[in-house]
Length: 227
Figure 1: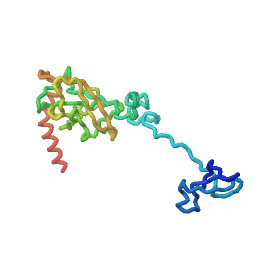
Figure 2 (figure 1 turned 30 degrees about the horizontal axis):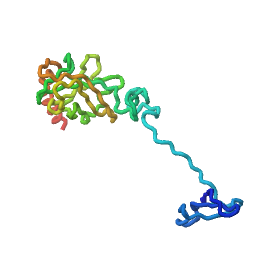
Figure 3 (figure 1 turned 45 degrees about the vertical axis):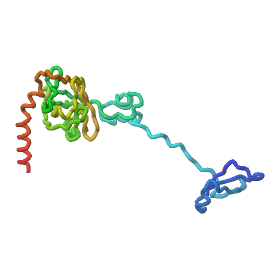
């Protein structure tokens, strides 16, 4: 509708502008005012009601557990940081790099295989891990093989994943390595300490490296049988 404004033309006449439902498009321009008497009554003249649209919220003030880790808004580490706007990636996932190795030692050789266990928990169902989304180390190495294993013998079947050292780009002396991926479509990131050293003791990574060829052969055989 035509909206009253503060412009006084003559006596009690005041300006209206903006056009109404029954006018031509040219009347809608703010530069095309007309004038009328405030005592007159028209169904096309009055005031327009408007409200402020609130700024879109973030995952840090919506009262929801967006990443499924049991922590909401500022209780979640993703939101607790300065300027945090998202609870993602979920941070309740735990990994163990080179399980059973005392210091998580990694030998910096191109074809050295690094095992990384994604540990099952009450809030972490490793069966929902998107294996194709897994990326380990600075270069985001893709997993070359995965299989379930109860790493800690706690009756929870964890997911062991394996990576070639040359694909990870872990430098000599590196003290931490992280794994990223998706669980049930939700991003996660988990880190563990590592010791990239030319002298390395054997852990589960070494043992699993010996098991990898027969495991891959068995996997291919099962795939052929399924087809």
